[in-house]
Length: 423
Image (cartoon, rainbow, N blue to C red; front, side, top):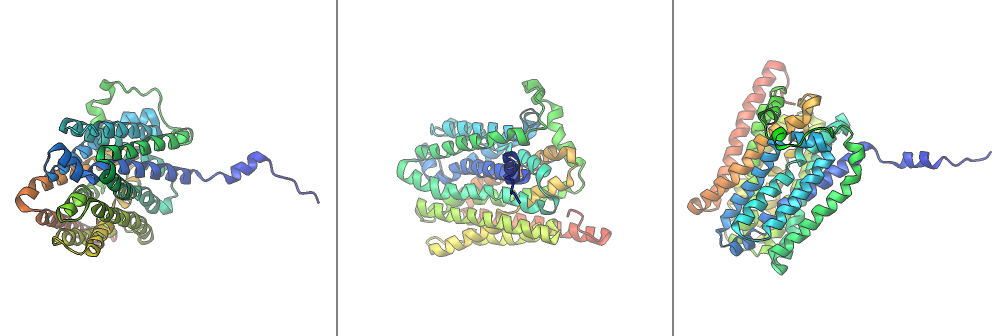
């Protein structure tokens, strides 16, 4: 019997990875690089603020400006997503972030303000574009896990910033270290661009990007209208807002806080990398757990209590604490306080109408990002008057309070319907 070789085309087709895996790879890479670039300013904060003649806590204002830039995109970016497609929007975002880092490297306060805003605008496409891609491709029974793997790119990028950018800044200077992140942004944009043909099939090349078509009331109203079409999104968003206050404090101030406690920049960067690395592991593990329990809202509420306790303990570190204790508490804070995002985004994609996933994600994320704006700014105002410990404690208290509210709501829904409501 003669064995026939299958046609080359059939062989290649059999070897081609499934679309959802390509989608996950592209969104994970984009998420990791966006976070890597966005976390560069907090990581080099001790050197940056000293070079610019600023108080150390002013890094909180720059972190808030990054988040404000993201909110601007989320508010008016729907036409951009429609015109470019999600992969095209991710490419454009990488370009904005690279320009933002280049501007920030100039070092003056106006340049830092402009660079932070551009960094935030560059990050803006990541949540809605990633959700649109994964909602269309991810197997339904594994969405929380797949979204959480994608969102694990955020702390992964932050961990790499702590491990790579902090030592590079200490040795070569912080402006030079930013060049590494700029190169990563360019490489990522080039790497995911070939997937546009596969993942941007629904884009509308005729959609106008004229300022009058983008910056109008209807564009701003669309994300919030999408939230109104999805029962349960408001309470989910409120909990996410509270989580973002905690995560904003951890990401914005950890390196500066630890250097103020007497640790060297490289050591603080390592602890920061452990905090972020714990978030990577936790996002995948807790996303898997949410799929298994089928009760992501209840899982997030329980996690909120643990995160509140972890950030409070982290803030209570005494000056000169053993470095092993510093790393342990940083790891715990990152595990519980920086791992909620994937479950949250998967819930938005599940609850939102299929034709409004991107808009609902933009609207909910926009409100959530207010926590990243208000939290670090309030923290920066509080530090000169209250020191470092009390602001960290207050972050934990507000999250525990919101978790208590969520507990009451979930119990009421279960009593009325026999289930959690937001599941």
